[in-house]
Amino acid sequence: MSTATTPIRAANRVHRFTYAIRQVVAEAKKVEATGMTVRYLNIGDPNAFGFVTPPHLIEAVARAMRDGHNGYTASAGILPAREAAAADFSARGVEVSPDRVLITSGTSEGIELALTALVDEGDDVLVPSPTYPLYTAVLAKIGATPVYYRTDPSRGWLPDLDHMARAVTAKTRALVLIDPNNPTGAIYPEALRRQLIDFALTRGLVILADEVYGDLGFDGPVPPMAALAPDAPIISYSSLSKAYLAPGWRAGWMAVGATPRLDEALAAIKKLADGRLCSPGPMQYAVTAALTGDRSHQVAFRKELKLRSDLTVARFNAMPGMNVVAPQAAFYAMPQVALPPGRTDEDFVLGLLRARGILVVHGSGFGLPADGGYFRVVFLASPAELASIYDDVADFAREFAQA
Image (cartoon, rainbow, N blue to C red):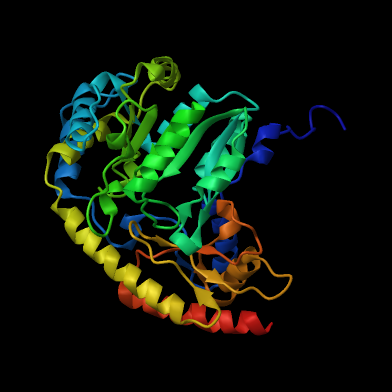
């Protein structure tokens, strides 16, 4: 074959890269092409289910655009947004200066910046199982290794410290904690949080504290982990995506803990941030509006989420061969179905999609064993729609068990 017609080879790292939440959509599109309606319960986008971005945030962005703030910003973000984020952390018990805060293109970019700055090729990072697949995707891209630590469904999906201790190696550089948790909806009690911080401190690990759902605990906001140990090497994350109902704006922030131990990491993160210029400019003005303005929408949102969570838990735990641990935050649940011999969680998920037009995500896409029977449900749809969907799930589960 001549070089003029030889296919251009993709980089090998791409073959290591997986992101199940989005990749299952390709199968859904095939189902839709047959004429079947697909009900998407795979992505946690509140706007897709009728929840509306607060008007004062929209006005802040529109005003920024009208006032001509449409050019590049400082790579770390505009100062008012960084000051607002620092003040918000301070109000929650974490003293951090604005110069240790970066505004990012969603929490996802902040996570990638930190992992790229901290972790060399061949290093290990402790990630929970189940995990949010962005972490394993980024680690695959930079040539590092995700090492899973177990979270225990019999204990409300809490981290298993004994298993975590066995997972640490000489190459381990960081510990990822997602609390409140995606995909399980778990919240870690304070005593466990202190144990996790001590675990990281004694082993010289940086904690990446993913707290995007911190304002969506059903009983109210969850304090940031760094409030328990101001001098610990903790990098904290949040964004407008979930609690402020603006996921498409890609506006997040990260705070690098005040300890001098993180000074070199902060410099490296800022250096990498320079290379991508900045996050979207007008949306940064909404960060100040969100963190200094009216948050009453969160009270109503949490109430709606708790209603849907209760329905989800009651329905799945009433299905033969099914069980689910009750979430305590956010809008995800991780049901488990008893699988017939030789079948996998992906068999169940794809079968449900093709037979009933319901798209959920298989547990193995989050790092769980394929024979465990777990799958993630996003319960943002209206209670009436969820009830109808759960009827169909129950019917399919009966058929699947007998197949």
